[in-house]
Length: 562
Image (cartoon, rainbow, N blue to C red; front, side, top):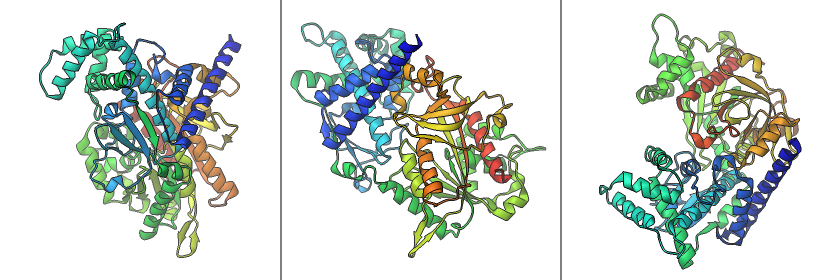
């Protein structure tokens, strides 16, 4: 049985390899048709892989509803209407009259050029390109199912399709229509039960920056029919600028230079710097939330403060306003990386207004005057580009000024292979999927210090995957059960380590003694039914693990821990 599972894992890895070879080839070529010979090769590889996040991708009739919802939260609104999709670099559209369309769950600027064409900016590296091509391939697979379910054996449109078309027209005109009847017609086209269709409709209608499922299904089916019957082919192209710039750190260099010039301008460049890769709210709320929220007789816990802020936009805005007046600086991204940065000058902190569980040594803080540089989450290979550029010396007036990096802390979201959403993972190494690159490192965090907080904690190697949407149960079980003993998967760890180890051990840009802290919280369990990323986000359940990791990072820095 074990050999059989391993064979399935090997076949899956071969499918991933074929997908990436195809995507690289098509990228170099400059264009392809999703249902042409090259596109069919990608479809076959994706179906052979059968990723968990795409659920029933191989069912010939059932349209995968959770996968569709996941994908449309990461693609620009209206892309289902577009026959042509063009992937571009930053080429001046940000200053044009085209309004930027930003997907709900992906930071990328997109532009609807006309009724049939969508431009999508790719400024976050190859991982971003692979991510969107995989999602688009999945969409075309589901669009073909919709077309087949909507056509009878004589090649005529079924009554259900004609009724869906009427419902979509009425929806667009804000005219009332019988939704229960429309759900019934839609369920036939989706190959789903009425209950499943109703649940999906509610999920789509409650989401921001996503069209209704009636609209999406109609347009996916419409374009598929037009290609099938009228030869109006869909096409994906890559701009020459994108093909030329990819892999050259164009955006990462601009991003890092802007940060360093900002530090120079504020006379902060020579301070000891602690880099933190995390979200843009947990450090800010941890340092300033108590002062804004106030406390009565005793200090409140960080978790209580975080939950209160999470439930109140008003309180959240007050915290940000207070922070900007008391030592926090925002460095807005103008480079195209879509990675914003916050700088925290600890000399301006009111230590008496910190939460009870943020510990500090006043003498250490006064002596070292640490500076916190919080960068928002990178995406895949972008982690290498941004960290590599950030750790380089600052070029200023023919002088190279070396940054005093004392620690690098990475807080990330990851899939867990044993446990559930919200659990913690403390890595001991990063293994880069599909390569011979392995990055063991000394983690200043340990499993033991996270125990006793009511959250399960795992420790061990983690795998940095080429794409979270390309993992299936066979591959993941292999990594979990084999001698690798992998505890989780994510997309940035190996890329960060590649940059950090090169900067410290080869280039001498930073000290070899730089302190590294890695901790992840589980956003999903990709081998547990109903717990993949497509099942939904953590929501409020993510507050406790996020702020526990933040608390530990700040305590290490404020106590001078090694």
